[in-house]
Image 1 (tube, rainbow, N blue to C red):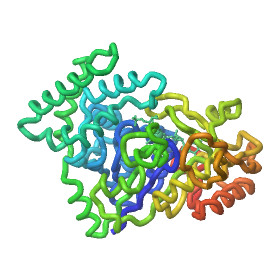
Image 2: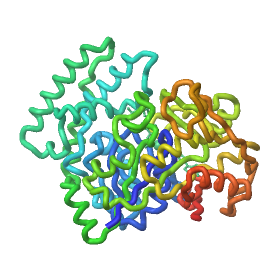
Image 3: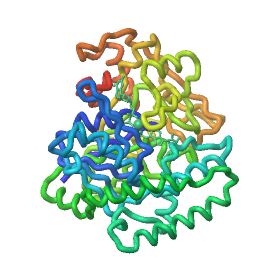
Image 4: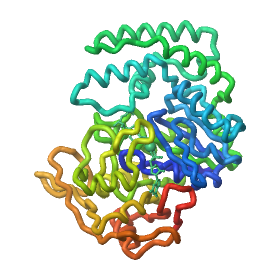
Amino acid sequence: MPVDVILGLQWGDEGKGKLVDAIASDYNVIARFQGGANAGHTLVIQGVKHVLHLLPSGIFHMNCKNLIGNGVVLDPVILFKEIQNLLSYDNSLTQRLFISKKATLILPTHKFLDKIQEDSKKEKKIGSTLKGISPAYQDKIARLTLKVGDILKPNFHEKYHEIKSYHLNLSKIYPSDLQYDIEFEKDFWDSIEYLKSLNLIDSEIWINEILQKGGKVLAEGAQGSMLDIDFGSYPFVTSSNTTVGGVCTGLGVPPSAIHEVWGVFKAYCTRVGSGPFPTEEMGDIGNLLREKGKEFGATTGRPRRIGWLDIPALRYACMINGVTQLAMMKSDVLQCIHNIPVCTFYQTPNGKYPLPTDYDNITPLYENLEGWYQYDFSNASIPQNLSNYILFIENLLKLPIKMVSIGPDRNQTIYR
Ligand code: GDP
Ligand code: IMO
Ligand code: MG
């Protein structure tokens, strides 16, 4: 009864969506377990691009059930729009979609609070996607918000208005000129009605029954390990456990059910939003990689910050997650440069470290590897210098790179 897991090992946008879609047909269920519409997972299927924010990335596979688990914070407005956009492509997709009644609802006032809380941080902004993620998780932990299952209860409206007034009172403590726009509520109420028509289930029971019958589940992580609320570069993180522990709490599956843990990383690094980024490359080469890799956020369109592969951060993420195998994405993008620096250790005033402990006063120590300049990947083969790069990383992380991605399309994938 295995649950396999796909997790981002860096700062998000590693290409998780592509890997999930590429291997989804081996599974009965694809399940999101944390985060919300801050995620933007891109799938390219026969040249057609889809960006998913809440729908799990197995949604295009007719034989897969897709679950939005209890650990997710669900914005019904975004879910409604996402489904409507895809219905012309596949009008049966909601039959394969299941939503936990225990998932937390994102309310219009959560998005309002996200904006004013972020505004009030001035130059210390986190760079939030402003999807209401942090206020919704704050309320979940404070035990005062609404869950998806509450929409079926007679006192839903009453509870909604109680929480809304609490939020509007709370908003007054922030020095912001932003006003709450009641217009947002129309879409919200329409989408709540729509949500009632979907498969709302006790997903922890449902998923365990599937596992007991021998079904296979793939848990799809959102964000990346370095954005984890506990293990990321706090406070520049998201508000959920993006690491493997989040799978158990976000789906209700036991740790003993977890089998393979895929760690997904880009052959270089990116980060959107503020916070430490030890290997950041701000010069022309960074700009070139941004352009070649189309490094602009799938959710917000913001330019992603670019950096070199950071082995201390990867070692850390592999350790926390118990990664069993790796997938390296965007290997094709690096063919625009001759030499590729890889950070193998962090130098700090107190010594040389293989793992991140503190992000102050870090100097990355690099080794330079020869690139695969202008290599043509159209025959889906791995050039010698890329092979050397792979072996170098495998040796440092003591883990196999089982999949190498050489383009955004589902088919531009090499299994080793
Ligand atoms: P996710 O959030 O981890 O699912 O990743 P995103 O979808 O936000 O960002 C990854 C981006 O890289 C998307 O635009 C993908 O289409 C694209 N992508 C994924 N794998 C590859 C690859 O191997 N090569 C190239 N050039 N693009 C890729
Ligand atoms: P996927 O699943 C990259 C970043 C934001 C910000 C911080 C907090 O596509 O990899 P939040 O909206 O969660 O309060 O923002 O986390 N962030 C992401 N960066 N990919 C994501 O998701 C992200 N989700 C959140 O940019 O720095
Ligand atoms: Mg993304």
